[in-house]
Length: 334
Length: 244
Image (cartoon, rainbow over all chains, first blue to last red; front, top):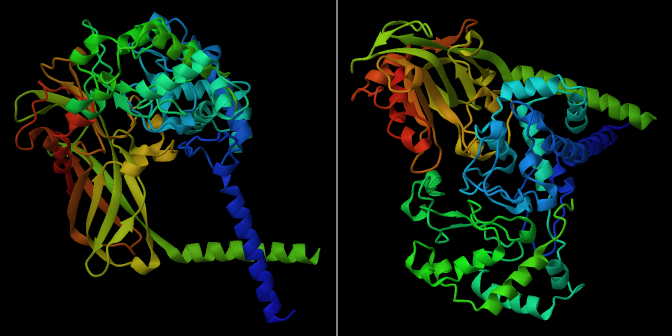
């Protein structure tokens, strides 16, 4: 074998090595989270050094396991119910261990992979880190991270699930967070009647089409399609609770303009995520519409985009609601 | 078959070469050791009582901080930058020093060092990290994105909080509450990092936190637990560090 041949062989081998390395670090593209047509690029980066299927499965199992709470009584799913687009049906605010009550409404979990920050006030900016908040929060799962790792490491099946996802059966908080993050990032809502109508494979009724038209005029500045949120924060003119006023995003930024501002939530699956608003004060969609279309709105501490909403007639409100009900799907395509 | 053997052989050679070159690149480690002190004596956690200049006596139960942007400044030549984030826990003998790798071409005499107490803004917003940045270390603000850069806790005489505790948690990486703090120091004698016992000793004087001018009113402010509250407190951190 001449020197040139050896050189060529070495180059070839080097290329193979590079190719193999490139493939193993190419995981973000192999993450099986769908990219629905019209959606912006995904924000969620996920985990590069794990088996995606096993990671999502581990996250799904953890999500419904009360082992995450200090007394092993409540799971993520206790408050994020799968049939309710992972919101908490009929509960104004969140519930925790020992009957503790939180102060904000449980948000639905859908299309989080396209969301830039989390919580009603946007205090958390990384999806994989988000679950630390409910796991350790006093009014939620109140768990201590050391204790949690010990429980999971001693569990008959979790170390094996961690191994299938990460290659070794070591249980750790970063791994747990990545699994939960991957699971919730896979909750995608993009198959509602609205989506199918936009794709031309279904049709909306006349009142629903009229509702969509009104929606685009009155609501879509903030609840912009196709995610039905602009990922922004706004003051919607609700009177703060007189007993325990919640200053919202102000607690994160301490900027006066953020006083009483809350996340613009997605409206997908809104038929299933009642009650509504950051504190769950409205039980019915008609209450929400009545609030936004009320004349008092103009006098209140409300975002100009909210103040610009017109005084909608009864028919107009009903048609907007009819449209909103077309935003329902199983929210679980992954 | 021949090709497979060749690939295997080349692979082994490549790995071996990597090992050899790694040995050449990283020749030495220099140890940077932190010494918690209080009132000119080694700090004994929970038991040492220190009377602050503003009046009340304090004890200390916890002192932990992140060190990053570590750099060694040579007598001659270029600054040696040591990447990474290091969690120093002064209550744990195993976690009171940093072993910094020095490449062979950077051996020499070093007369100064600098570092930041804090966590880089990019790392604050990264996903979960293992090791020193693992949230299990208790140095992550779970309810809000961001690491706690420095935790100082204990009890204070006449304190107003339950059990008279105080909890100073300093963090915050976003303007205007960017609370990473730069520490600069010079060694009394230049350190030869080629020496087998190369080490740099740094005193961490908790009394300086309380007594730096103007003295900190720990009775009135026993709890500092978010970035905004920490902003006027954070500049006290560099006061604690004295390079020997």
